[in-house]
Image (tube, rainbow, N blue to C red; front, side, top):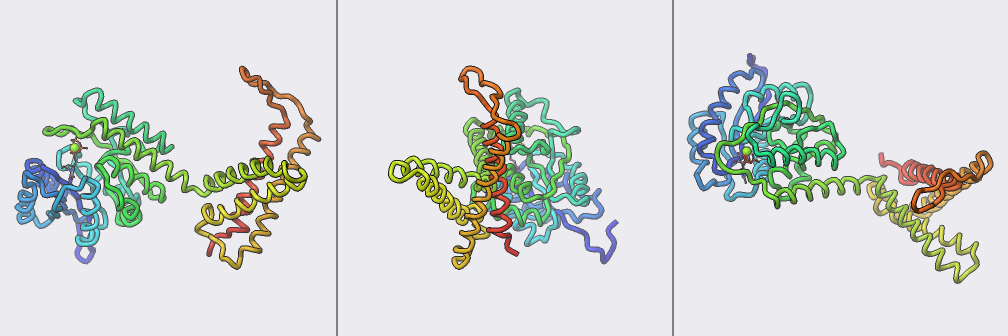
Length: 393
Ligand SMILES: Nc1nc2c(ncn2[C@@H]2O[C@H](COP(=O)(O)OP(=O)(O)OP(=O)(O)O)[C@@H](O)[C@H]2O)c(=O)[nH]1
Ligand SMILES: [Mg+2]
């Protein structure tokens, strides 16, 4: 039991509604009954209604007068599930002083009896708890049509593959609990976008994972809503897929190692094309040297502006750092030479195998070159990030 002087932690169950007048009247008392079984959390409800045409907000207002744990937030117009949740969370954390919020549907799809299981995970130290239909003990509705089942199962598999994260089984569910810490870190990245329900859920989870929050899954049996039809049409699915691929590409492009490799690729192109051009104009040795230097200059500028933009050099540092950069780059060329000539000396040039159809023969020389380039790149990245663009303290 709650003891006096020991202020309980507060959890607010947020229920976004749009035309849920009948459902909300029944689900609220059911939730309040479940709350009675919870001892060490103070439980409240916040309904976020977008001025539903069926006047859901009127029913909620009556409930809020009857039960002091029930709150209502009304938006003037319908702005989508994601916007309703963001507004509701802001209100719950800042006005109602919640420590944790739940995302919960009004349509009886989410089993309220599972709420204590979510809280248990939060108490164990998890930041975001997902109600999951795809872990043992969870399920999707038996009465869903084959195409709806297929979409849900393969939709989640698709997301797992694109995100290359196979630990999380249910990416799209809307029954969740999260801490204030998680909300504070994730919501600034979501504000600018208009979300449908699914993209909000996927986007929130993806961002939370990227930021290193601890995520747990709690099984539940998803119950199909009795009234109304699913919004899941072909257009909807296309948008969700585009969103996932975009989010993942964005994440890859934001990786320093990707930027480094991309800048290196541009450098290689500059080197090759300027060598082709310059050798027509000047002696080969000079052209060879100049072409390398042009690539070095391009790499230096682009890495400074993009790859290491968070550690960008001050103007006064540039002369010294540029000399260091040249030395580091020369180091990588030396590594390539050593591996190339060392390989020839110890192993020798031998044909390894011929690729079928195109008839191209792979020999040890090619292997030495590839290994040399890879180790050279590894050296470059190491030197750039530890000597030239040092981590700021
Ligand atoms: N405030 C607000 N609530 C919404 C909006 N869209 C949906 N909701 C509510 O969000 C919850 C989930 O929406 P549902 O329509 O059940 O969506 P779903 O569960 O993905 O799909 P079905 O149940 O198959 O129709 C319900 O409580 C809805 O009333 C919206 O734009 N604004
Ligand atoms: Mg529903």
